[in-house]
Length: 150
Image (tube, rainbow, N blue to C red; front, side):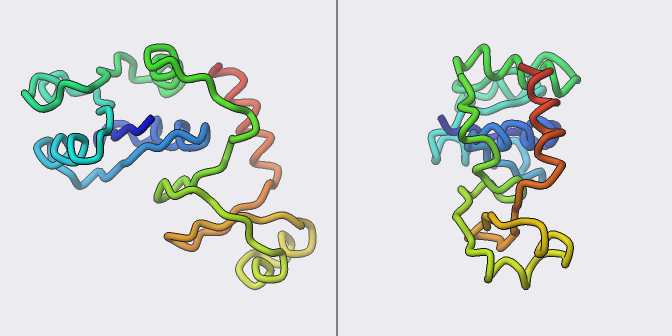
């Protein structure tokens, strides 16, 4: 499933990417550009803007009802029939949406803080933007938040 979100949904985008959903997001796009990209890439539009959903080419959309990110995540999962796979959590770059690849610890050590280099042994990297990820204490907090959402 491929999605694209409008500029009002940055928080939702982050949580959907954590759940390994392919969500394009560029807050600089105006409505016509967003719709054109959605059509060109076969993406469902996520928006809070009712007027955007009335555009002729924006037929494949989901109008997000709530301002609360937790409710937004629940709505997307329920209405699109998505069942998150716990094994796939944090498999996608939260910045640019690219699937992550394994990064050998030796290569990662030069790119992470010294404490992380000493205490972590598994790393992933984004091949597009170069960001490095590891399973620190933030991951357990994210899982707890997700448990509350789901």
